[in-house]
Image 1: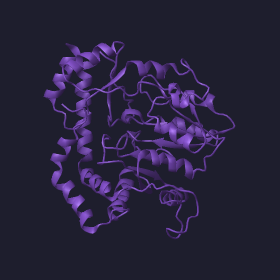
Image 2: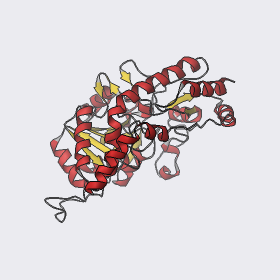
Image 3: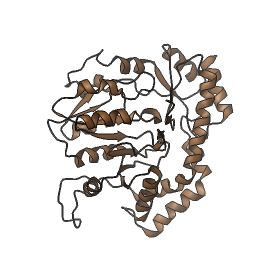
Image 4: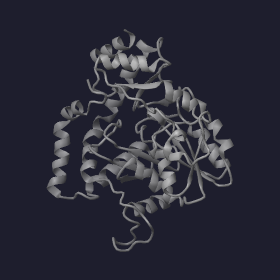
Amino acid sequence: MQFIDLQKQYQAYKNEIDKEIHEVLDTSQYILGGKVTELEEKLASYAGVKHALGVSSGTDALLMALMAKGIEGGDEIITTPFTFIATAEVISLVGAKPVFADIREDTYNIDPSQIRDKITPHTKGIIGVDIFGQCADYDEINQIAEENSLFVIEDAAQSFGAEYKGKKSCSLAEITCTSFFPAKPLGCYGDGGMVFTDDDYLYNKMKSIRVHGQGSDKYDNIRIGINGRLDTLQAAVLLAKLPHFDEELEKRQGIARYYNEKLKDFFITPKVLDFNLSVYAQYCLRTKKREDVLKKLKESYIPTAIYYPRPLHLMAAYENLPYMLGDFPISEKVAEEIFALPMHPFLNQEEQDKIIKALLG
């Protein structure tokens, strides 16, 4: 049994994936080839935004967004400590300071009520993270931002395809960044990402940043940029998978419902708010007896993972920040109790029953 079975997915779509890849090989357009543009247009339409820009990873997408907003030393960006380090890492990479706000205990997304007290004269923006495939509460976050002249970035690395109050993920903030890391609901076969925006100026600026700050040609560099291009072969893989994506999301919903039905009386199961549709990038449970449960699953050869065992404010990388154990009690509590079960569209009921039996046995 695989935690995420990419091989089953490949075998299901093998002919389409191979065809797309061979078309790239036949054209030899490996860098920003036509398939990158095709993917950008299709995903912009899917998300319901004006512009989409294919980039090298979800991390670079966030970095480019902050660069486009002119963030620099002395600035502060508010985000959650319960996420992968990339969310805060990019803030540090541009010289700014990550400022953390605790999460909601039910959804694990940043708690808007915790954001206001973190705003200072140095605050420039907020990065909301759509954890485990469910969008954060962007109506509240955007309202706080508007009241304080801040910008909002949606970190949708785990939520492409999700919905919030009838709107698609990747359309909920001034700039949205997603990832196509292979384990994501829509994943490629390497690193990849995309930036979404309705703002023409920001789009053109990020398009320049993506290619070393390029101006009219590759030797006309009008700003400092990065090498942040999406590989054409990765775009080809995504184009092959995209027609199956909505069907896969429906399967994820069914798998989550079955888990919930069987496990709700024994564990804290995922809470999806009534106005949200989660893509279940991960299916996570909580228990105070996590080590005992993980031991049982290991004995039954069932793979698991912990997202995230240590909140960012307790990472050695951020020991320079004025945080300590106890500063974000909800993030710390969740980090001690949470674990993830296998979740992918090709997980069948027999496999789920084996997992559930091991959990409850």
